[in-house]
Image 1 (cartoon, helix red, strand yellow):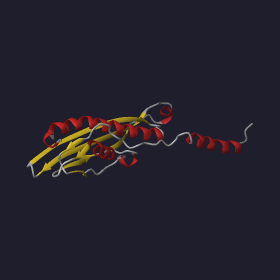
Image 2: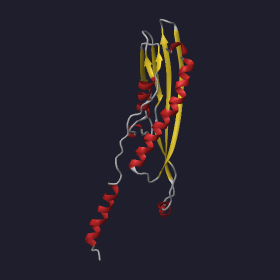
Image 3: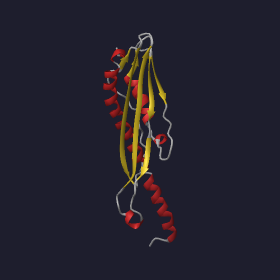
Image 4: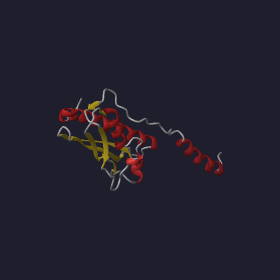
Length: 191
């Protein structure tokens, strides 16, 4: 028979053992294959105008936030190859917001598998090219949004993996919209 003392030692030890099986994953930065878009401009810069305000913002909890994903995208996809003018990439939205979903309370809630959180990520970007020497300007706006729901009892590792996959999905959708938009609206500036 197990003594009370052994039980008091064993229960917390089991809890710690259960936590130790939640390994901390490693998440690499996003990279984008293929040839970059070559702009006949001297400079490409990022102007971040997004500031997370309000309740539920999670950007700091992401291993690769929407903003960081965009910075990687700009570095891999856009290249300056000219002698004058510039392309400004203005971030208007790079949010990651958590919303609590209603779940069943009490004993009944303990036995239900329910979604407890909705995570929404957004990316909004203005592209503006200006070359005073050629008297040319071009602009376009690209916006994408993704969301995912998470179980009410989601683990720390599952949450981090969800954030990472959400960011990856967001920037892949952004890439699919931004590259054709840039090719269409910035023809005069592409080399």
